[in-house]
Amino acid sequence: MLNLTHTKVKTLLATAPKSQKVTVKGWVRTRRGNKNVAFIALNDGSVIHNIQIVADPNNFNEELMKNITTGSCLRVTGNLVESLGSGQPVEIQATEIELYGSADPNVYPLQKKGHSMEFLREIAHLRPRTNTFGAVLRVRHAMSYAIHKYFNDNGFYYLHTPIITGSDAEGAGEMFQVTTLNLHNLPKTPEGQIDFSLDFFARPTNLTVSGQLEGELGALALGEIYTFGPTFRAENSNTPRHLAEFWMVEPEMAFYEIRDNMDLAEDFVKYLVRYALDHCADDLAFFNQMYDKELLERLQVVATNDFVRLTYTEAVDILMKSGQKWEFPVDWGTDLQAEHERYLVEKHFVKPVILTDYPKKIKAFYMYQNEDKKTVRGMDVLFPKIGEIIGGSQREHRLDKLVERMREMNVPEKEMWWYLDTRRFGTAPHSGFGLGFERLILFITGMSNIRDVIPFPRTPRNAEF
Ligand code: 4AD
Ligand code: MG
Image (cartoon, rainbow, N blue to C red; front, side, top):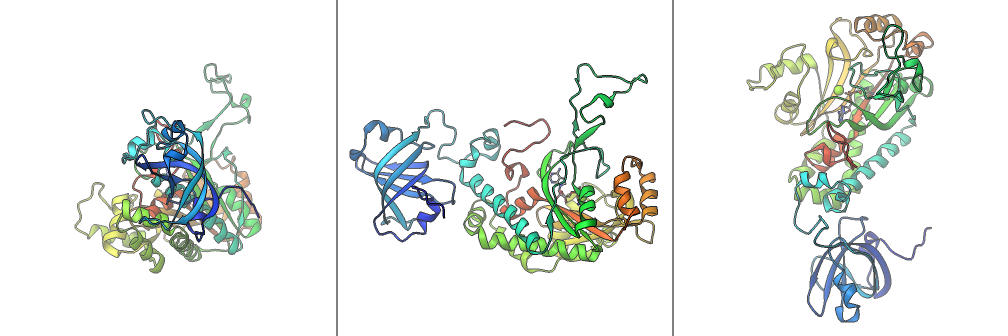
């Protein structure tokens, strides 16, 4: 067992005080007091709560005491005692204080007063030191761990799919190109095209928009796999729910048909919500109090209710009969917007919803085509406050149908020879989906902007830090 000389605040707050000698290291959140006593709230990121340090300024160097201001970093050794003040079970009566680093109050931007989310985005390098971002980052960690645990416990293998690819999994053309060619002097073919044969990979490449296609290769060998990695989309969407770089969890399962896929998606997200309720109680209580008074209630609703399942066609019918005024009009064949998704979830059913059987023309080429020739076995999971949190489908595993659809949609068949090989050799029904990790974190924390649930957001015109 790791045995360090200092103890985490989280551990100390759960330790019975017997005046034992302890050492703690962390950053000063606040300092108050007078000539004879200083109360220092110290936080080390291990938990949302601070530990209170009590020091008699007369026992310490004057220069040192002057430098104990918000943001400075300290080592404190002292005795852990029961706290007589309200608000904390224990405190440390300091006997030694070492200043690791001061933080000039005239320039350190994170003073005690509350800051706007917009301001904090400008100082994303320091915002992890706030209560809010500390809590967000701990929840991100807990959810990452829970994702691996869920899949491991259910016999799925973690498959690492490439970040740099030559294909466009979603066929939406929203890709960031990857090249080492000199952009100021591009080599040209005799026909005047860019000569990618001289590029690093001797072909055009891009950052992946989804690990799905490679995930399918894994599933058709290992049975059940999942990927969990960064994905990139050059879509110019300036919304509170879109990032240019986001993390996606993509399970892919051989022998699952659409119903199995829905069952897995529902079980999986309920598990994650329950895991957060069980393991992140302090941080969730903070979010519930500071940002969203209905958060815990909403998490309970999702964890304990069966999701409603209906087809796109049924949903469009409900939306058209709703009498609502939409910003984007609905009719059969158009893609649903967040306002429609949220109406279904928040107003009509008041439960999470899984929609299936979308018109084929608004979905990707790889989805299983229904008998009706109009719809495909796609599925989206819609959540309160978020709208689409999961997108997935049963895959088209019949070679002839897949090729036909690729031709219709101008998906380069020749370049996708490896994908088509899975349908040539031992093809099998299979399904999968993608959970947007930041959308999950938005839901779990009740935060309202996706830029505030990832440490360093990448959005149009913004790649600072
Ligand atoms: O619905 P999408 O585009 O589906 C796919 O990429 C499939 N290949 C997944 C699969 O079947 N394996 O994206 C899946 C999810 C969305 O439901 C959403 O939660 C999230 O990824 N997402 C984004 N999150 C943040 N920023 C963006 N720009 C996102 N685009 C999609
Ligand atoms: Mg989608």
